[in-house]
Image (tube, rainbow, N blue to C red):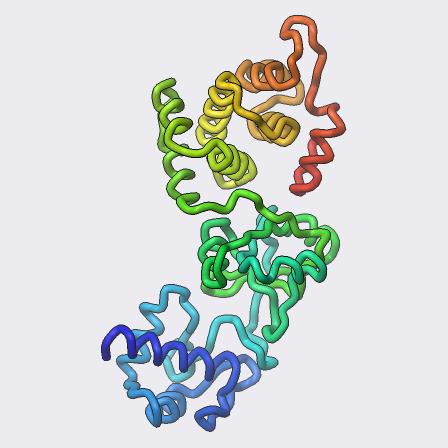
Length: 313
C-alpha cells in the first residue's frame, strides 16, 4: 500500500474508532475498544486492509493515535472521541503551563467563551508551544494560547494525559487563557539557536543581528517561562537581553525583570546577580550605587507575573 492510500486508510480508521463505528457495522465497548478482526473486515469493504497494514498504521502514525491491547485482538483511538467512551485516562497534574494552537478565525469565539470541547469529549492541549504552533497551522495562520494549568488545578479543574502525550480537560475558561503574541515562522529554530549560542559577545550580537528583535524577545521570554530549561539557558537569555538593552532595544520591562529574578535571583541577596541588576538598573534608569529598587516589591512586576501563574514569595 502506498503512502497516500495508507494515510487515507488511517483517516478512515480514525473516523470509525473516534466517531462512527456504525459506518462499517461494528460497535465499541465502554472503553472504546474495537475487535481487530471485525475492524479489518469492515474497513476492507472500501479500503484494502490486512493485519500487517493495520499494525504498520499504528506503529508509524506520527501522532500515535491508536493503541492495541496486549495480544493485539483489540484496538482503540487514544483520544479525540465524540462518542461517550471511557478510555481509562489517568488523572495527572499538569505542568504550570499548557498550550492550545488554533486558527485565527476561532479567536473571537475563544476570547468570548474560552476553550470548549464542542464535538469532542475533552479540550485537547499541548505540552509545548512548538506542538501548539503545528496544530494551529492546520487551520491557517496559527494562534497559540497559553493555558494557566497550574492555576486551574488549584481551582479544582482536572487534567488527564493520553498515552500519546495529549493533555485533556473538560474546558478552559477565558480567565485561564493568555494569548501568545510571538508566534512566528522559525520559532523552534530560534530557541535552539539561543540555547546553543556561547557566552561570547560576538555570538550574542550575531543572534541579535540575524533576527527581528520582537521575535528574539518573545523567544527569550518563552525560555524564561519554561520550567524545563536549564540554568545555563536562563543565563544565556539574560546575556542576550542585556546586549539588547545596551543596543537600545525596547524591552517588556516588568515581565523581563521579574522573570530574571524568578529564574536567577536570590531573594535573600537580591543584588548579587550583577547581570540582572544591570538590566534592572538600565531599564528603570536607576543609580546603581544608591537605588533601593527591588523587583520583589514592585507591584507591577507581581501583577504581570500573576498573569502567567508565577507568584513570588
